[in-house]
Image (tube, rainbow, N blue to C red; front, side):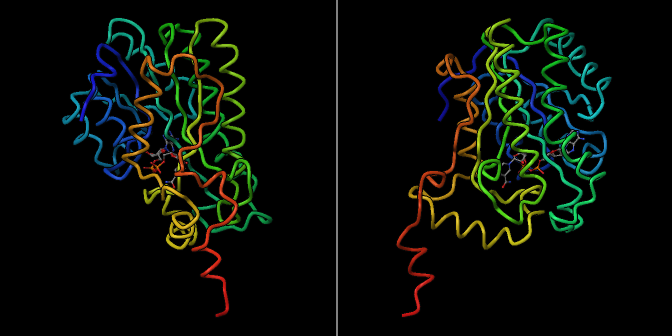
Length: 271
Ligand SMILES: NC(=O)c1ccc[n+]([C@@H]2O[C@H](COP(=O)([O-])OP(=O)(O)OC[C@H]3O[C@@H](n4cnc5c(N)ncnc54)[C@H](O)[C@@H]3O)[C@@H](O)[C@H]2O)c1
């Protein structure tokens, strides 16, 4: 069901790797709601993934950008502005990567070079994107930027490793940059804190299957899936949420405010 919520709006979607990606589903939903899109991902992901299939489906150009490169990010905004003949109304930052997670290195023994790289990709990149956009005046008034995050920014989830620090920083950048961009141009910046979801990035977290089941039992509505997340992103890009900025918005079926549930107690009981 579509409501034309993004009719006439233009946006950039970072991070669609394959059909499971939250960014992939969001691109499809944005298109269905009337938006015009530019897709982007790291050059290596463009070679490994299947983004061209999505590009065809949503009729969008693909402009490569490694988010750790200021030149790439600047080029992305310049090319996008040429393509649309003006600025964009929304940006989805759907990017995360930790080499420590990938290599299964425990948090207390993290290789800090890997930590730097992970923080750069997963968190500092949001600053880089916003800074480039602001310099080029690439986001229209009342534009909306959303970055995806996880509750490990607030509470300890051991297997999430150094991504937890990345998410805490990401949320802080959204808040701080959101202040300045709001004052300067009424651009809003928020993070959506999503339930654990089986995607390529999600599958990298050790024990994700058991963890998804645990979260499901701990959430009154059950886990939010990638399609649900895409819907929420659409509302955040729409004019219906114009006064929401600098927030971390939990999209997790109630997990974040639930202490315990009978199902979890039962699974722990001896009789
Ligand atoms: N899957 C989950 O359980 C879950 C839960 C909460 C939040 N999130 C967040 O959602 C976002 C999207 O992840 P996903 O689950 O859809 O997985 P995904 O693996 O499909 O997406 C991650 C994307 O990051 C991109 N990326 C990595 N390095 C990059 C770089 N240097 N430059 C540009 N792009 C780069 C990848 O190519 C990929 O497209 C991430 O921020 C993730 O942390 C995921």
